[in-house]
Image 1: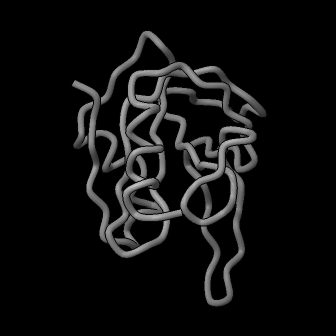
Image 2: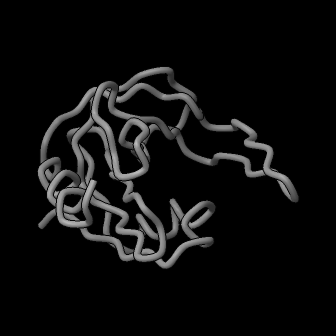
Image 3: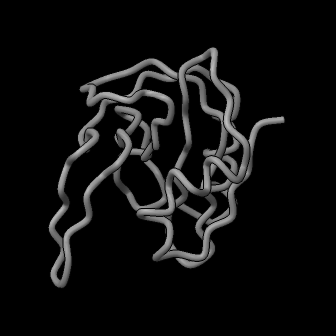
Length: 122
């Protein structure tokens, strides 16, 4: 996937309602080589949609305070990674919106390791 195709793909989801399969619910511990990462929010992917890394397109789910296995939500933003091969979508329940600062704070647990710019729906 080219850089332009990757950007067009994630932008095409802004404002859309998507079905998310959650594979890293709140409290999930992802063990890395030198550390472990505990997920404070639900994190998953859109089944069948391939992102820039060749895997299914990842989505942060904000505004749902309990672990879930799937969720239908509105895409409210994009975490554009400048130093990676993929970007991440940011979604929330259809009746909620978050500011850029709120999104940055919520996903910093993972995005702190990347140079990320947050685009929010206007």
